[in-house]
Length: 97
Image (cartoon, rainbow, N blue to C red; front, top):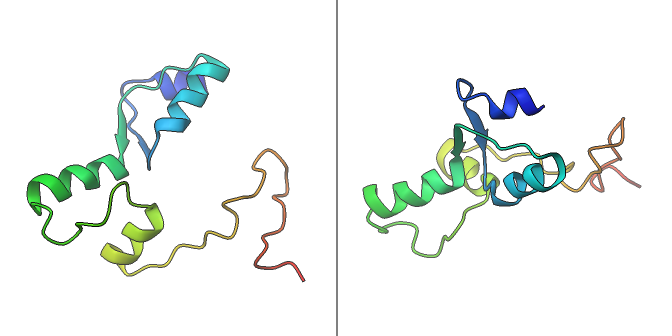
């Protein structure tokens, strides 16, 4: 993972990556380069382009919110709380009986 994340020629796209970047540094000494954060990009878009006209109550928006608002797509968040280290992923609460 280290060569991939530290490669400046590859753009890494995150959404709200503050904790992810800190986790990579603290646990693996990976110093991610060339990062694009969609949440921070939206905040800049909101402040500069929209002049806060439409999104006054949005601070750091969720990816689900932005996807639904701009793309009219509702993301499946059923595996968001799964333990991603375990394969296959743990069953989503949505599908548990």
